[in-house]
View 1 (cartoon, chains in turn green, orange, yellow):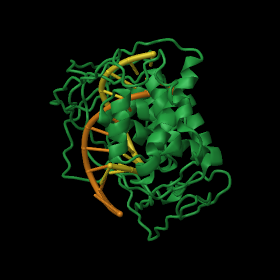
View 2 (tube, rainbow, N blue to C red):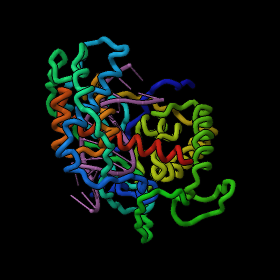
View 3 (cartoon, protein in one colour):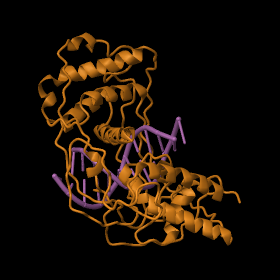
View 4 (cartoon, chains in turn cyan, red, green):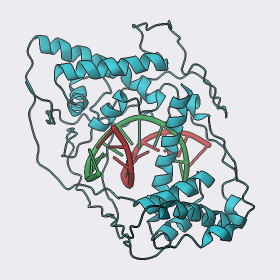
Length: 359
DNA sequence: ATGCATGAGCA
DNA sequence: GCTCATGCATA
């Protein structure tokens, strides 16, 4: 009883070595991905006047901060310890675990890429007006005071995950650039209505939503944590399915995954749920294993002022060029890669938000 | 619950 | 280099 906290279940399965696989990355973005405003010019947009834009964005951000923040400090913890990735266990806990195989869940795949973006806000105003505000007492500019970010390289290892591959490609790649909320998915349209239940593929947001809710409730009833679910998935032995992290389970329950991802994970979690409830009926043992720990990776923390600047830049250009990223990184005194990743994550976030907002 | 990060596959 | 799916580390 009791396992409401974090327990680290077992990690017994050796590694399922798979040769390779393909995670579903490329999934079907066609569905929702098409919503980019896509401005297509990325490299040069800024080229000429971008300085003003940058300054402007930064200034705007600065103004914002000045309003209430006075915190010149920015202890950035940019330190990445290299983790020794030697472990391959699949426990999602503090042990490094990564695992087995591949998989992708996507429904259809095809990437397309969008063209680029171009949207330049008209900024024909005075760029310098706001310019000076930036470096106020807040360390926004590249002023020192903050750390110098010296982190190093994060050599981390790898993680692969596993889920099953659903391979069903249909041929259709249309990428539309404007997203149309049409049936996401795919194909089989099953019955739609209310839940058909039987199906696996059901790209219906409403159904997913209710499933996620029911899932959480039943999971709690079983007394298992999100982390438990994640590692327990590996025990299901579903071809191609390995364990998942607490993060992913959490995101599934809170619907903070992409639609495709939700659709792909649903059948897996559904299978786990049934299995877990069945097992509980006949008393199952509880996993209580722990593992030793390795080195952990340090998470970079971007201070609020810098974050505000990044947001301002993002508003102007969500897809900055490499050069632009480097410039921004320099101004904010952050590592270029940190900035690049921030933009990537921001885009993912925004995409998600847009999608859910549309439904 | 989330922020920052890695990595596969593709353009 | 981007997108996507995921994860570790954290608040």
